[in-house]
Image (cartoon, rainbow, N blue to C red; front, side, top):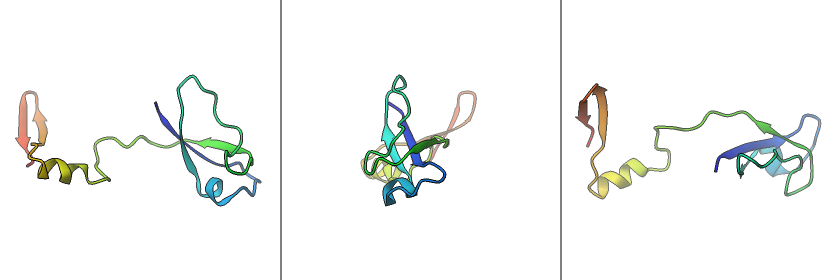
Length: 83
């Protein structure tokens, strides 16, 4: 399921959660949220890019420590060992 980012709609005061923005995991079939689940203020879905290929949570370090190998693709059928 995708994770969507919501912020308080323009002109809404909202609570600290919706003013700063919050994430909501929703099915593709679910309609966008209209109100903040914390305070009830109007919210809007914020467009954001998906994070792909970068480890911000330290997964690369944990995989390396566990003995896994990471490969980088150089070309068709060519790979370079990262660790």
